[in-house]
Amino acid sequence: MDGCVFCKIANGSSPSHKIFEDKNTIAFLDIFPCAIGHTLVITKKHYKNMEDVPPQELAEAIKTVQLVGKACMKALGAPGFNVHQSNNKPAGQVVFHLHFHVVPRFENDGVSFKWQVSEKAKEQIPLVKEKMMKVLWKIFNKNQ
Amino acid sequence: MDGCVFCKIANGSSPSHKIFEDKNTIAFLDIFPCAIGHTLVITKKHYKNMEDVPPQELAEAIKTVQLVGKACMKALGAPGFNVHQSNNKPAGQVVFHLHFHVVPRFENDGVSFKWQVSEKAKEQIPLVKEKMMKVLWKIFNKNQ
Image 1 (tube, chains in turn purple, blue):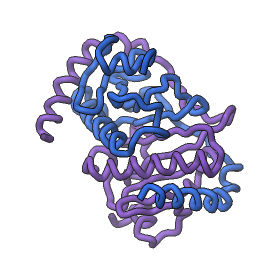
Image 2 (image 1 turned 180 degrees about the vertical axis):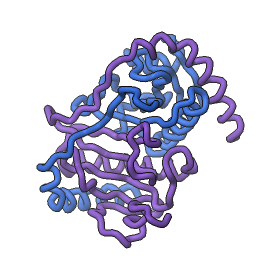
Image 3 (image 1 turned 60 degrees about the vertical axis):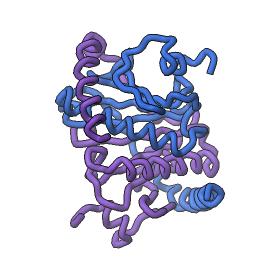
């Protein structure tokens, strides 16, 4: 897509610290890393996020995420890693081209993805359960 | 696996707020939600995390994640969602059965996954790039 920075990286018209590429995906080091080895995995084709990516291409992307995660453990000696992904602005998405963050983690590295438990959300579980089930099965059946 | 709380949920011997199930995966509401609709997606089979899950089963899991994400937007009116996944203790993994968090997001909801840019990590990009590339292609070629 014109003007999309990740499309430019995917087609090679913008430079990147590319570390891996296969038929459908590319992995490159984040230039604003929160940890050593912080990597982005993207689809080569432009999709905004999980809302519009075809499931099969999403599946290819997560396989590359797994590969990068395993590689950061082996190459950098990281004892773990996080995978993080954002859909739309309220979720913190900044570049609107589907991407996964792979963040190598080390003991006491100061990186934190901790969250607070919401009492309001707890109370709403029974109501949410009903609402979610209805819609989930509707979408699932439509996809079959 | 004996004693694994998510295996018990998967085989029905422990109760859960299950909202979806297909051949390989289950989705249920997190009982310690950070947001309304906070959901966990797991494989039915026991895998510790992305280190040992076969790529094809991982692909099935991410498809269910996508389904749940779309459903939370439709069912709860969430304008976005995050996907978060942890591998091993230093990454914050607490239950050692592969799971993805799907966190519906709303404007000004107080949930934050923001991180700090690490200058040390920035400096190490060229070195990390070389190390990662070597290992990535080694693993990739071994898998072919």
